[in-house]
Picture 1 (spheres, helix red, strand yellow):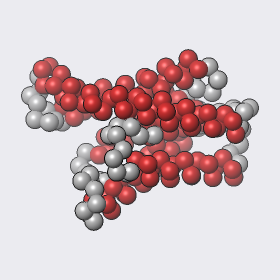
Picture 2 (cartoon, rainbow, N blue to C red):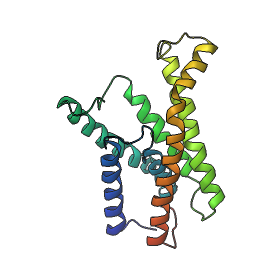
Picture 3 (cartoon, rainbow, N blue to C red):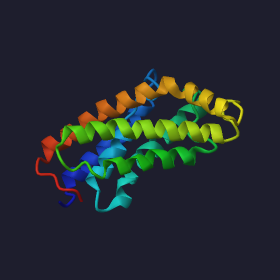
Length: 184
């Protein structure tokens, strides 16, 4: 399948809308579309894997740029760009690998990927926080790692729910638009 103008336009709109959604005030923290977009990128660009990682990276960068503008103007408590952020970009983009096998319409494969990707992201991101000199001021011990993982638990259900909801919307809409989908 070749990318036509309609699909390119849909991808641009999806990335722009996901960036805007991520900076909405009052949004449950962790409930965001970026992992679902990474999964979609992985399924869409299974043979051109380097492109799969671009969708979530562009979405993250745009929303972080918006956060930074809001932060500078004292409209958000969250900085858009911060030290060590590149690790988060790598982790979000890497969840695209869970989408590489999602070209079929098998619901079980989608659900498994929609659960596995945010789970791996949760485990790795919290491990990195802890490994960065005991993030959240926890000791560099197994107990400290456990405490860091526990600190991240409030975000995990929202991350899974966001991936399930946005994944269903993104994949469902695309399947309706392009029923005879073949990975690019």
